[in-house]
Image (cartoon, rainbow, N blue to C red; front, side, top):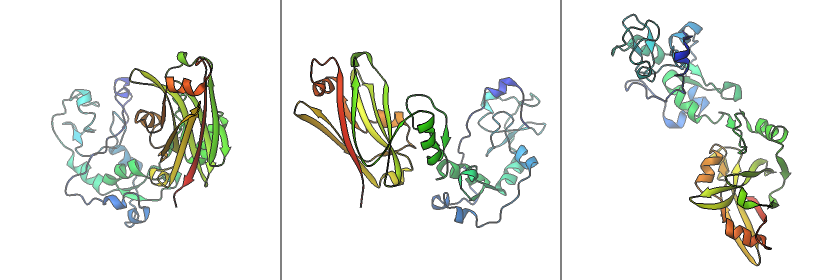
Length: 304
């Protein structure tokens, strides 16, 4: 039931997680990521024709209550109804406020596999719980952590590690300690610049060290922080420290690495890392303060 009209193609968007009807039996939050709990009921085979019935003709996403229909029986999701100005995208009749209760009941009887099945999720979920599960599924792919471009690559951790090495030419290091030197000949000309991403392999895991310049209000600053290539519940098992200094002074930061589930921008804009004001960085650099020469050392360790 896809619509070929380019007007509606522009309206496509990601589906919203909409709560199911109150009288439907819903899995509790503890079982939403537990495939063994999700697969207790036998799977109901869903034919392609039923899938098409539940597909919104505008955004092409699965429809959730309230499902609207026009007087001719054509259906539409609630998110797209206001976008088509209350006109049926199929026959152009006025939509009104008619709900397709029969289709909502059909949806309630279905059970479907997680869309991340190819990444390892084996769960079978009730139709109305599937979106919620997928938004939290531990098998959902990760986004590329490289911050120097709008990279759209997604995948599991081994795939992303190979991608960073082969496509972004990121430096790869083994070990839990590091000693990096960052040099810029004219730091006053560099604003909001991503300078460095280094990947470390230790404790059987991968970590991304970021270093860059950005504006903190009106003040130019540098920031270094570590991200964990995995989920947040695993990231909390580790700690890291960063140290920078010169001329007999030093600054030390200690923290917990953030998961790459959190975007690079989110971590940076929360100031969750070692922040160095430009004047202090140039003081650490020594000389005439016209060249940035920072040495950042650090280590990663696992909490016992």
